[in-house]
Length: 454
Ligand code: TYD
Ligand code: MG
Image 1 (cartoon, rainbow, N blue to C red):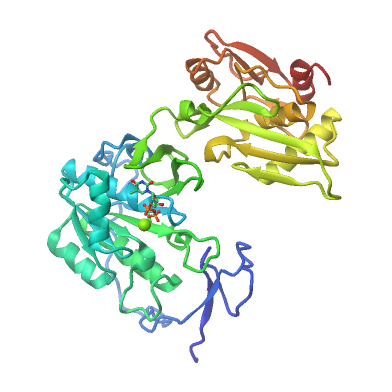
Image 2: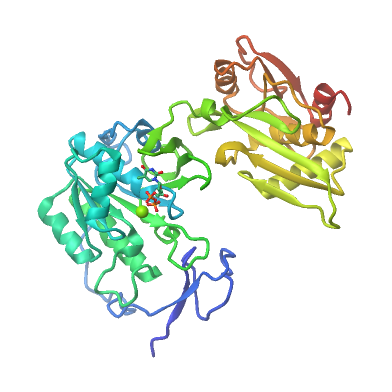
């Protein structure tokens, strides 16, 4: 049969027999690229009758010791990794270009090198001189990091073979190319092939590898998503360009909890750890104003307080606007629908804007009640007391559901000087310390308690 080219989505790696403008699998636009099939790929012939060797079968009860870990000393990074770097693990660090991935990893390289891990930093994006200049700016020139600038995978693997490092950082996977694959660096086949070789090498030789991957919204360069399943840990480095806060988020971790976050601040001399993110996220809060509500959330194992800001205004458009930054747009639509259907508070004809302050992104359902409070506060033009935090999940019936880790949230709020909390009724009884709790069973009750109407 003649070889035909296939078309692969660079965002989700689904393959198709013909090109289309939008990926049917993940819905991404302009992400489908043409791929030449590998000439040296696995043959389609059956395995035949030649016998293989018998596998070593073990029982589930075989005792395993937890993997030893090396701490970098960058506590925010160690936490996100699940307590430190696991030997022979493969880690992907994804993020928008310019967000600070190279800066973070150069700092991490220096820390791991100083902690006794033989560390190699391979850059395919910059020259060695540029990296050295950055190291100077960051004050890292004393760290025993081995630096190389190359993009040829074969050379990199050979160097790894002879140097036997404990950690190799590849910045970035999109610039690397394997000479047995006939497509340009950054294409889906190249990214997949080079990541596969590197992670395989990591497993076989006990080396940890950290792969940097750019995510582009246009999907022109193969998104790191095509290699997410190959690696043990996937971290995303997020932040808003205009803000100095950067969040390193574990979205997958075979060696630790997912959803853990590390918070950094981009300064003139590199990334600084933020050990108390709540204080930072609330630092820009001014006088209590309508539409502003503090949500006591949980990120991974840590409570984090963030400010939600809502703006509700009469709409000049026939289709009122709904815009969200840092939260899920369909969840906002749901809260608006519940407010309208269960509490009789309409938002028709009103533009609604919701923003999570500080460039933070939240995905917890526990933010529902805080969002509802922000929307109502903006709509009624009535500020909530400045000393109050809000959290709770809202169901479609308008009932409020208790959230996990209530005590941790309250403790964090108390630590930051808050004195009252509005939370759902029910669930386990909690010790609230000195916090005054207002508890509601449903959204109507909540509206009555807080805004004196219902
Ligand atoms: P970089 O690490 O190159 O981003 P990425 O590798 O994700 O593309 O960081 C780019 C930005 O960070 C750049 O706009 C300058 C800024 N920056 C600082 O603000 N302070 C610093 O100390 C450094 C090294 C960079
Ligand atoms: Mg970079």
